[in-house]
Structures are given as structure tokens and as C-alpha cells.
Image (cartoon, rainbow, N blue to C red; front, top):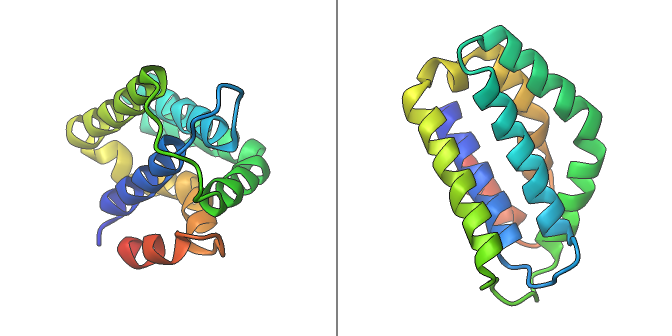
Length: 143
């Protein structure tokens, strides 16, 4: 599976974790979504300057990987939450997926750049090494 598809699967898993949250206070799922929104935002802001995109994403991921790891574990382990129906979160998730798709199709070189892939690698590793419920199936899909 190519790297773009790998990151697409990872984003889908992260969004699935967000979509099963139904609390109005910031949950691990919602906070994880906020991190993903920030990463996509950084890629969008720098889509014409790939080295700048790689640098911005690397800086953000390096500064937040501990929290992202913790949130991913909590989100994936919390399989008892009902499916989210609040339109605000559904809208956020849909918008994030749309932005990712636009980057994936419109800026192929951006998401396939070794520097960008290296900057995103720690997030991929979070899900590949996770022992949380649901992580096993995502690891199989990502490989």
C-alpha cells in the first residue's frame, strides 16, 4: 500500500475514533480531531512550498506527539461510546476528510514528499504500535 493510502487509512481511523464520541465537553476523540485539523491546516497553508510544509508539520507533530499518542490510546480503547450524531462534529469530520482529499488529489507531490512523510511518520507509528482496542484491524489495513 502506498504512503498516501496509508495516511488516508490512518486519518479514517482517527476520524472514526472521533465519530464515536457523544460528549459536549472536549473528549479525547474531539481533541484528537483538533490535532488532525491543525495538521491538515498546516499542509494547506504550505501546499505550494513542500519543504515549508514538512518543516511546519514536523514541528507541530514533534511538539504534540505525546498528547496525540495518549489521546489515540484513549480514543481507541473507548469503544463503548455511541455513534456521534451531533451535526457540529459530523460537519467537522466531513470538512476534514474533504480537505484531505483535496490535498491528496490536487497536490500529489506534497503528500508523497519524503520530508512530509517523515514528518507524519510518528502519527503513523502511534496507530501501528497501539495496543488499544481496534488498533489491530487498523494495523492490518495500513500495511
